[in-house]
Length: 188
Image 1 (cartoon, rainbow, N blue to C red):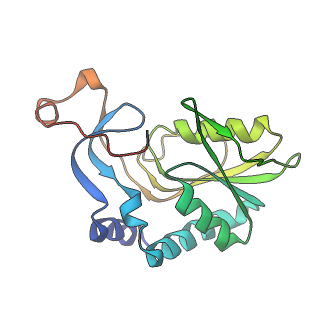
Image 2: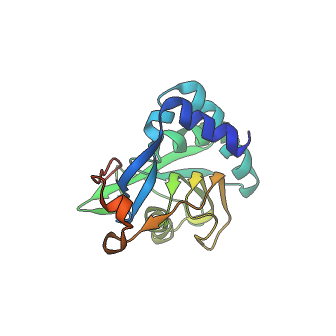
């Protein structure tokens, strides 16, 4: 599956949005990937999950962990495609944590799966969680890398779409973007 084919899934589902968006990172952008719209059809989930699983398979993970909420659907599908365990981190008092009795065996090989990465904050939080609980991160996989490969997690990072999407600090908005109402469509 090519990058253009993945982007076509986003376009066809209305998941590639144009306007003025406030990203989870606090940065502003003209484009937004609403993965929930693209992943509401199980055929798309299976297709995208298969491609990500193929990229991640050589990393040899025995567990997939995804940060909730955005990474849940694709993380679970990648784990299914790999035939491994799936768990997730979730917010508690504004910070990602491991709950629900999830545990890691010492050195357990773990793959982190996310829907979209811009600055990588939630992925880094999840890496820290895995390490704090004795696991070993073998790599990171995401549907969309909005950093165009600039984010470095210190482990292999694979994505299906790699783009340089223009982002702006709130106090450095170009006039055309500042003139549009800002929308915060993603997870909080």
